[in-house]
Length: 117
Image (cartoon, rainbow, N blue to C red; front, side, top):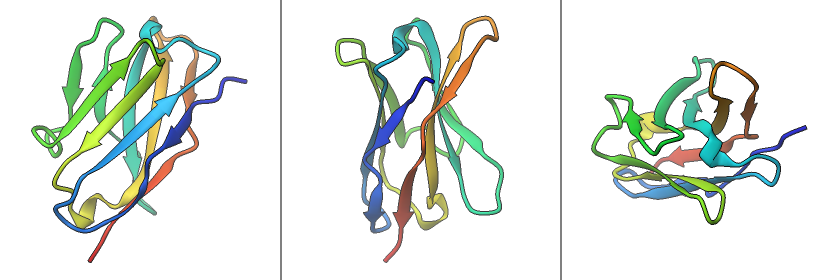
């Protein structure tokens, strides 16, 4: 099965920044709609950023202006740069790839981001 591999999570202090990455050896990201989600324990999984197959970007209101989603076609990688992180943004962060037209979708294993003093 298709595996998306996430990396870059960890512990940061409030106000600091962190960058996550997502890669795959099985699918080509430039042909998919890519998203980053986050989920805190006991809470719903919410989308925070989206990257379209043509390069367009969209952000949740709570992260707009602080987070940046980007892709590198040569490396078949997707990134999420998170600036000015706050404790309430502590969560498991997931990358997601979805076929255009409502076909197959694939998830990463999740990467833990903890924001704490």
